[in-house]
Image (cartoon, helix red, strand yellow):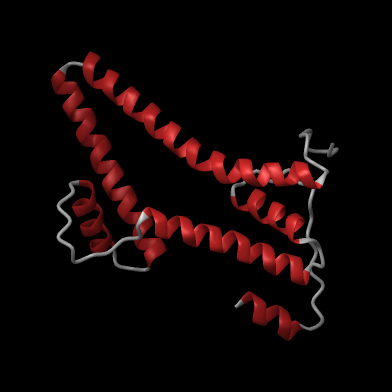
Length: 167
């Protein structure tokens, strides 16, 4: 048990391995559950509100969703806001002219797993910890589980090595 945070954290290798598997399966399931709850609430919201009010609420939420998504997409994809808004609108309304490309779910999952396990390899080599401990640290950090029970310290020999790994 970790003092200070009040959370119970796994100490054994088997416990940490189970947390890694749980996070890899549980995080996508949470997203699916949140989506289903949103569909459920949307269905009953549209059923019980008067039609005119429902339409106004739906239009306001749709516009907020489109332009907030476009804003975040323009920041992360490093494209102009107009291009991001175009992509957002054509994606949501399934117009999809084919002139823009996005990642598929399998490609995204492969990149996420590669990122997680490459980070674990990095920590296991440079922090001199086992690969399981490094994978546990990497996955609990990325999925913001972060019990605080693992603190990885990297002892770099030179400033040049630190800069090389950072950039």
